[in-house]
Image (cartoon, rainbow, N blue to C red; front, side, top):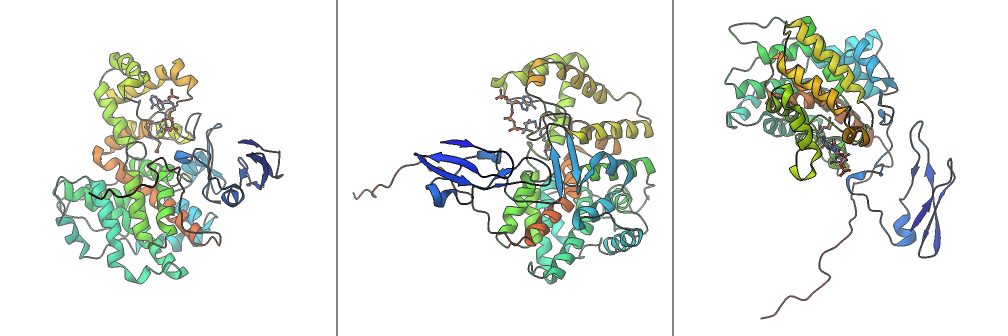
Length: 432
Ligand code: ACO
C-alpha cells in the first residue's frame, strides 16, 4: 500500500491491490492536515492500523493546540506562558469552557457560581469512611467523583444543555473539596468545609492544611504558584485521559462517570502518575554523584528504567510548561526560604547532563512538566501521593470542556476502534 499526499486540501491518493482510492484531506486552522480515512473500509475492505494513535486524529477540536516540534501550547489560541503569567485559573477555566476570556462581570458571575457550589452533599462524607485509611487518594478520587452521579440526579441528562451546565459547575467546584477530603481522610484529620471568602486555589490550600484547632494562613506566593500549576495542567488536547473521557462520553455515559474514567487513566505512571514517579526517582538518586549511574541505566533498554519526567509523545522540544514550572519551583523555594534543596540540585544537574548526552539529544527527550512539579508540590507541603490528585483537580476543566465540545458536535458518534485479529481462525468445539 502506498499513500501519496498532495499538498493543500487536494485529496490523497492511495493505491491498494492495484486500485486507486481518493481520500479527502482536511485542513485545520493551524497544524498538520488530516487524511480522512472514514470511507476507507467501504472502499477497500481494509482498516488503518495505528496502536497508540501516533498518527490518528480522533476528533476536531477548537480548545487546545500543541506544536510539539516548536514546544508551543495554546489554550483557545493564547500561549500558555502568557496565561500563566497574566491570568488566573478560574479565568482560564472560563476560557476553556466558553472559548473567550471573561469580561470583569462574566468573571465575577462565574467565580460566584463556582464558589457557591464548593460544598459536597453531607452524606458523601460517609462514603470516605468506607475506604481504608491507607487507600491511595487517587483510588478515593476515582470512587468519589464517580459517585457524584449517585448524588446529583438532577444534572445527568446529557442532552439537556442546562443539565450539562450544572454538571460542569458542580465538577469544577466540588473536585477540590473531594481532593482535599481524600487527603484529610488519609492523615486522619477531620474534613475542613470550604470557605467562600477565599479564592478557588486559596480555598483548596486551606481545606488541605487548616485544622479545626488552627487555621491556615494562605501564603500569597504559594497560592499564586499553585494557581499557576493548575493553569499549566488545565488541558492538553487529546492526551490519554482526555481521550478516555471522550470515549466514555461517546456512549452517552453521564459526565461524572466520564470524569471518573479520566481520573483512572491519569493515575498511570506514563501519564499523570509521572510527577510522583519523578520525585521518587530524584529521591532514589539522592546526590549529584550518582547521576551518571542513573543516566547509564536509562540508556540501557534491558534495565526497564526510564528517566521519569523526561520525554513526551508530542513535545520533541522543551515542554513549554516545564519552563514555567522550573521558574515556579524557584519562586516557591525562595518564598519558603528553602535555600539548599538537595533534590533541586539533583534535578538541575540531571537535566544539564541529559541535555548534553547524545542518547537524549538524538531522541529529542527533554524535561516535561512533571520534572519540576514534584519538588515544588512537596515544598508546599503536599505528600507524594497527592501529586496526581492535584493534576486531576486542574485537568477536570479540560476534561469537561472536551466532553462538552464532543456532546455539541453533530458528527459525534460512539467511539469503536477496529482491530487486526491475530488469534485462531474458526474451529469446532471438540466433542469427546
Ligand atoms: N528515559 C529513557 N529513554 C526514553 C525515555 C525516558 N524517559 N522516554 C523515551 N525514551 C526512549 C525510548 O526507550 C525509545 O527509544 P527507542 O526509539 O530506542 O526504542 C524512544 O525514547 C521513544 O520512546 P517511546 O516510548 O516510543 O515514546 P512515546 O512517545 O511512546 O513515550 C513517554 C512518551 C511515555 C512520555 C515516554 O517518554 C516516557 O515513558 N517518559 C517517562 C514518563 C514520563 O515522564 N511521563 C510523563 C509524560 S507528560 C504527562 O503525562 C503530563
